[in-house]
Image 1 (cartoon, helix red, strand yellow):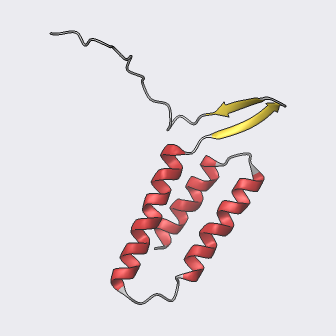
Image 2 (cartoon, rainbow, N blue to C red):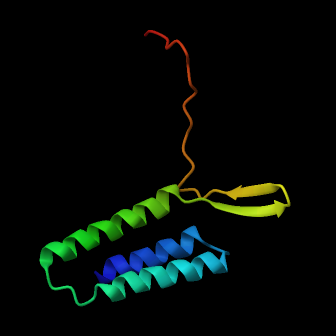
Length: 97
């Protein structure tokens, strides 16, 4: 449980780097969720909660991207290296080998 708690906070720091509002909001939410369930005794419920927390960590790490307002009508996306993938070009008619 503690390992996952720490992993969520490390992921939060990486995903929301330089965004103090998002960092604080994510910190509060992570702490609140763990605090609300700290007295849970059921092993089944604990495993379910750990699975949810693990899924949240993966979603944060692989799907969330930062955007910065640069002008009144422009947004600059700040992708992390984790999110960048090689793009395969789309072909209407695939070539036969």
